[in-house]
Length: 534
Image 1 (cartoon, helix red, strand yellow):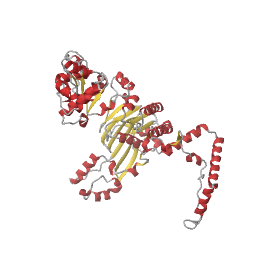
Image 2: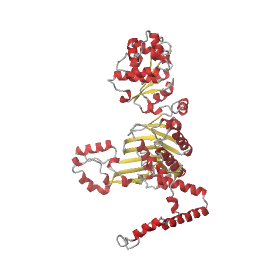
Image 3: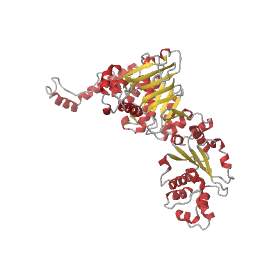
Image 4: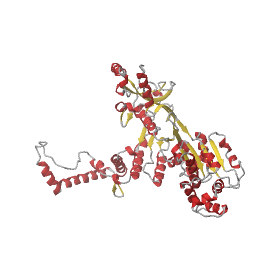
């Protein structure tokens, strides 16, 4: 199993270190933070290949970290002769009896460890050419990758092959798997499992008969007569059309998979992605102990994703799995204890949240766990009405900007589940505000129930102070006035009691909040909400 990865100057990562779980690793992070790059780097270090080709053939100036490139160019302009930046990816393995040849200090830590590295660095073979290259630094815009060489070594310093490694990877990206290849393998698996040699021979004979019948068809004969008449124009031989049976089992690659009678390439993207991922798992997982899966949720409905995630979990038992995802469903079902939130330098784990919180999110998979994980700041509210009012209060205080425009996510936790979300916020040091009702409790009573969280300076609880105004609606009326609210809501209630009753009616609550949210007229918001968005 892979214990750790260290990356230097590869794509988004200038100096990156991450430790892995033995089993499931769910990789999440903002766009362009490097989720795909991390999976790519693991696969690259285990295979020495990028995009299916040797790394040396794919090496490009654009694979070098942009900051490292800028620092290198700045030193050249300053008249220095800096060493060109190197790309290094080190994978550290658990030590066992089969890893002795990979042990050494040839790694970024400099300590004795078991592992493998792939390294792209300036080659001494091009010293003269490089000196000429840097003689006019003002013209240099990129790292001179053409002067680099690539080494694939154990930490011992010895060159390696795939047979040297204790871990073999399977990189599964549904968007990159060719449909025909996957279909071919599926058919071959069926044939292998269900057909005996006599049946295979029978299929081959039938296919040959089909070929002969095709050539004997009158329309094909006429076409071949016409093509044969061109003899001498392009070749001295006679040109004709026929079905290729030059291979022993040509029919295996010629048959096309159908789903409910529909050719595979014509079914929806969701069905295609699901089948491709599962076919790839069937084909590769048995022979691989490191499974890399890129965003399995693409194009999938909730029910299809449910099936796919369950099968991934089942097929990858006893494997080390790295999955990149934007889906809270994938995260919740495969386990929050496996979540790794990427930064530019490392990954933050939230597996330390209480077991009951992990169980909570696994059972209620609709919760948008990743919204809290990925937001810059969060405001937690207990219903859709609160969500609309808080967003309007934010817009009033920030010149019409929605919270999300500033990276502030207002999350409706659909009930009093604040503590579950605060378990995550506390671990991630996420700036968080809870906006909730006092439910008639005296000042300070509600805040006291969250005392284990408010010891963290980034977490605050905001509650209406006066217990006479138990919920959102009376708080709004108390801070504003009946005349303004009647105008906004299009009502004519003569007393505060009647207006509050109208606002609190379960059939009106969300409509009332929506009208306030959309109104051209501004109301005075309750103080505790203003404090929360401040």
